[in-house]
Length: 470
Ligand code: 5AD
Ligand code: SF4
Image 1 (cartoon, rainbow, N blue to C red):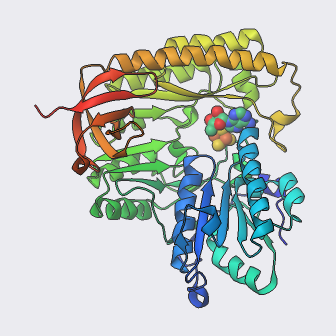
Image 2: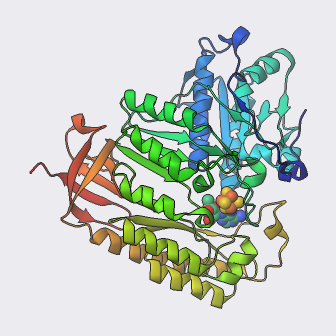
Image 3: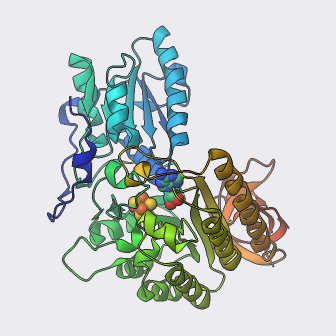
């Protein structure tokens, strides 16, 4: 058994991470899943969603086929998220259902992986649960075939590494979409914001080689993909772990040259946002005018306690440059309310910033103490009722600006990449270049294509549109 350890997970050495091209190996066990089915349940961010695409690739590589029906699954994989308490609760709720199922169907294999599996306290609690068969973390999910083999041979496996981590290349992948794809450019995080568990669960910040990224984007484009989203915890710190000057702006420029019609990236940190980046985004037509720029708080005092290392003045300067250089740019953000010590005055400053920036959208959260992080030990005197009330006030303002920014689009025409059927009957859904969700009346043949759409209706969270073929 290898259990997670928060102190080890926190360590950072100067050593460069290894890029491993042949660490995934299924030689003797490539038909482990013949005639068997797997089900994968994914919680959390895009990084986890993309990891699940790799886990699916690996499961299918060893012969399993996918099912969405829990009762038909031979293997159930729960890919978990640790970012906030409610992510925990959702996964734990699901585990309750699985436990119940395992009581009647003993031979199902349950795999617990992802960020929760990197948490010391949690794994110490669940490691002896009889109905969880394999526990593995974010650094070693490519070894699932070995763990399955070991489990079938000897029983329970618990392998979690609290290491800085390497870059594992050449994994098989089954992507959820045929038109838009996630592409990892960097793993881990070294920022250690005081509230955040990610640097512990995902290890040190390590970049993929630009050649490998470009090759992947080229291949996707050759296979008909219209859009890639470059993924990383801090995409603009891309390349800082290499001993050369090549940076995220250079990478964006090269990805743009592949000719793929749409390029997006998440998440940007205000700390490393350079003028060179703004320049590249503004110059390349296939880099989409959409920036997710988490601010977290409008108060410099709270930003300092959070360890965010920028001031509101610096943040607003980036917003000003983006709006000046990139017409039609959408700016979205993340905000935490009720951080330890946040006063009503601090919170007012957050509202002030929202009033100034007028975000296109924002993801808002109540602070959730994560075991082992510095903020979890900070004195916090604000009652939960008050935090909830702040969140409601903030959301009201966010919604107002989301609607206003959508209203500006009414009767205008935008390019929309149609991705599939919409929940709304007879319609298809897609995204504008500036990342607005549009429900469009159109033919099925247009799925996977970028088409001009005239906006005919506006809501807070989405738009309605019609094909504009004039
Ligand atoms: N509590 C509340 N929100 C958090 N986030 C990260 N950690 C926490 C936490 N402990 C939010 C941040 C981040 C987003 C992905 O999740 O706003 O940008
Ligand atoms: Fe967490 Fe901060 Fe890293 Fe984002 S930048 S993953 S909030 S530590």
